[in-house]
Every structure is written in C-alpha cells, then in structure tokens.
Length: 470
Length: 169
Image (cartoon, rainbow over all chains, first blue to last red; front, side, top):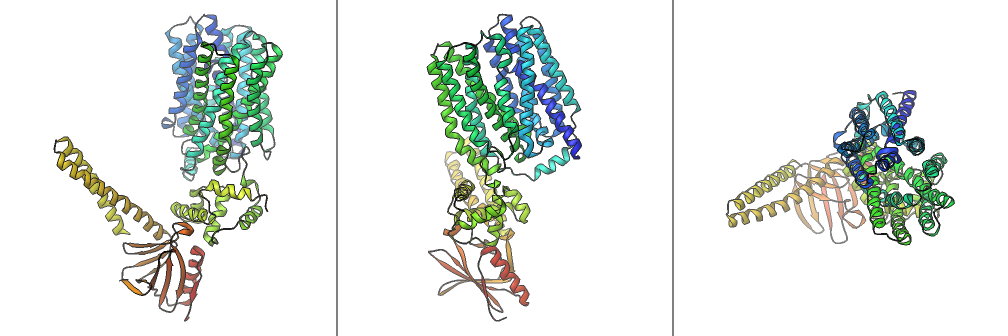
C-alpha cells in the first residue's frame, strides 16, 4: 500500500471510529441520551447503566480470540455496530425487556467492535503518529457527543437518539469503506515482533488505567449529579475541558516531554475533588471543578490510549491488546460507578468522598514511576516516556563507556548491548545478528551481570543516572 | 545432542506413563501401587526437568559453535580425567562432547568462565572454571592451515573475549 492510500485509509479509519464512538459516548456508555430517555420514562438508571457497561466490558475483554485478522476485524466492526443499530431501535418505544436486552447485546458487540479497531490503528497509522490518531478519534467523537447531548437535552431525547443513530450509521458506512486487504503483509510483519516483552508493561498499564479511571466513575456518580441543575451549561460544557486538554497534548511537539504533564494531571485531579469538597454548586464552581477533572481525564486518556496504540506493534493480536487496555478502563469506570452509587446511597459526606478519590490518585502516583520504568523498556521512543533512546548514538556510546563494568564486554556483547539500547526486542536482536533468541537472552544476562544489574530496567536506569555524568 | 534429546523424550514418556498409571491405579483402589507410581512420576519429573535444562544448554552451545574437532581430552590440574573420541564442539558457551557438556559464560561474571586458550600445531588447550575449580580441555584441533587457526582464534576472541595464544605456526 503506498503512502497516499495509507493516508486515506488512516482518515477513513479515524472517521469510522469517531462516528461510531460518538454513538457509544452519547448513548450506550453512560451517555446523556440514555440518561434523558430513562429520566423521561421515570425508569431507574442504575440497572441499565450497569448492564450496558458490564456487557461492554465483556465485549472488550473477549473479542481477541474471535478476531485474528484485519478482514475479521472489519466484519466484527460492521456486524457489531449493525447489531448496536438494531438493538437501539426499541428505545424509541416505551420501556420493555427489549431495552435491557438491547443494551446487553449492543454493549457486548460494541465492545468487540471497539477492540477490533486495534487492527486498523496498528495497520494504518505509523507508530510515531499514533498519539495523533488517538487524539483525533477522542476529540472528534467527543465533539460529536457534545452536539448530540445538546440536542438531547435542549430539544428532545428522541431527536438526540436519532442523532446518535445517525452518527452510528455514518460510522458503519465508513467502516464499510475501510480496505482490509493487507492481511498477509500485516501477518508477516507481526511474525517479526516480540511476544514476551509486552506482557508485564501491559498488565501494569491496565492496572494503572483501572485505578485512575475509578475516579472517572466517581465523577459520573458523585460530581455530575451535584451539578444536574445547570442543564444548559452541562449539556455543552461538560466535555469541553477534556477536548481542550486532548488538543493541547496532541499538538505539543513530538519531542516535548509529556511525562511531567502527567503529574500536572494528578494535581488537577486532586484539585478537582478538593474544589468539589470546598466550593458550592453554582455555575462558576462547576466551571472550575469540571475544568480540573475533565482536563485531567484528557491528559490521562491520551497518555494511555497512545501507549496502548504503540503496544499494538508488539502484539500478535492488536484487537486483544487494545481490548484488554480499554476493558481495564471500563472496569475502572464500573468500579467507580459502583463505589459512587454506594457512597451516594449511604449519604457519605463530600469530604469523605474526596478522601477516597485522593487515595486513588495517591495510588496512581506511586504506580507512575514503575509504570514508566516498564514502558521505557518496550516503547523507548514514546513521547510520554523518559527515554534513553532520545540521545544520539554517540551520546549513548559515551555513557556506556563511562560506566565501569565488573569485566570488559566481549565484542558480541557490545553488539547486543547497542541493540538493546536502541530499543530492539530480543527477537529483533536475534534477527539482526543472525543468532538465536536464547543466545541473545544469555548474552543479555551476562551483560547485566557485568554491569552488576538485575534486569534491562535496571541497566537502562543505571545508564540514565549516568547521563548527567557524561 | 541427539542422545540428550532422546533421553529427554524417554523421561517425558516415562513421566506421562507413570502419571497415567498412578491415576488409574488410584481410581482402581490400589493405593500401594498408586503410591509407587506417584513416586516414579516425581522422580521422572525431576529427571525430565534436568534433561530439558541440559538440552537447552546443549542447543545453546550447538547454535554458537566456533569450532568442531574430532576428539578431546578433559583434565583437571594434575590428573587426567577422561579421553573422548566423540565429535566435540567448542562454542561461545562451552563444549559439547557427545552427550556431555561443559559450560562456561552462561552465568555471568560469577559463574564458570573461559580463562585462557592456547593453540599449537596439533592441540588446542582451553582452561575454564570459577573461583572454586579450574578445568582444562585438550582438543586435537585438526587444522592444517594457519589462516584457519587465526580465524578460529579471532572468532573465539569476538565471542568470549579470550585472546588465544598461538605458537608453533
């Protein structure tokens, strides 16, 4: 596929995901259209919201084994979103068992379809550009969501639902137009990628995403209802700080150090809950709390989405990896929701809710350095990570020479070390040096031993510490 | 190498068979026989794990061979241990003599290391060991061309960091 066609495919894939995802955000995934419809019919929202989210979580988690190629991913996205369309129709009529059934079906298959998009993100967006693609889909889908929310809250929930379905229809049309003929090329490429290296960073990233999004769930159940009376403002302003944060992070220069902004995001989240505790419930208070909370969400969402996007290169099955990461997010929101519902039902004071949220932030603060550490090993050139790879080859060599080893490295070990430091996986090093993967592992163990370190992480950490010495 | 693989497969079969028999005899209410086969399973599992590790090391040595020679003489300082006439492979990570392996360079700086190499017209002498013990291997290298000797020495240096002392050429 040439560059021009690839660019068109990338745009098609972005459009397909953005329109489909706008439907999810405005309706299925705790969307304003859903809340408005439930409120209009006087139905309690909790059961419906939880059912849709659990089904969506299951879809994201279990999609991997069913979707193993780009063609299957396209079929899954088309079929899944088509089912969502059909299952949403009953919401134009009075509440019935079809509502709950429809939510479960659309929740599950939309989860599968979203996870399947991992194949297209991986195939059509170059690695260095994934942060931009992720930013694009999040920004466009949230802009569409705002438009649908405004219609649903200011005109009629049914018109809002029609808009959500229209958006889904456009999304399906774009999915239909997506080319899926690169299967062989992609499979060949996937065979050259590492398998073992992605596991630990992915687990840690999922854990981080899960914990950080507990606060999003708390926000849905605790902060949002407290400002319900500001209907007009909430309908359009709610996601604006999120979009602004996404746009800022997306458009920062690629060499900008985004890692420190994550700590700013933490501070914003802490500030949001403290403000919620101390401030009142009028318009200006809402503007402050929402700006801090959703701004922080924007920073974190683009962080983990783009990391996940880069991880797809190291995975046999992009749908599985993408689905796992997103399921951790949905699971976090779900837990936050349940926690929020519990604290609201027992009437916990705002101060204590803020303490819970701050505890969550503290846990993520503790997790951030080891997460960075693990991710650096896998994605050295990612813009959010403090990476050794940002140095020039000569700088790297200088640092390596300045660090004393217990015993000099052999010529072969020096070759392996250079490739480790340039971010290659064991499999890639084996391919480059025409040796077996177990030989690379043995050389790597010997190198660690000579530098008196226990792992790649420690080796890179040692080299980074010595960066200032040189 | 093949012998190690065959032995590993044999232990795997023994393990599978003894597990099946232990389960079957346990279910057939013959506890004593079941117990005996459980013991056999445990022993064969230990042997299987050991042989699998040995095969891994042998494969590593085979994959990184520097030189193949027709025979070897293994000695410890002061006394002769064994003379082997099976094909011997000298590698980055040790020597493979038939189904026997002598490892070096697999456990970092504190493990067994190759210390010295000496090559004359007929023999190649390799000294390896750790702080506790040193061994020496004498290999009938069979090389007749000086260039071949130089190439082997060069490869040895590149892979192990040991500079071979070449004399008599």
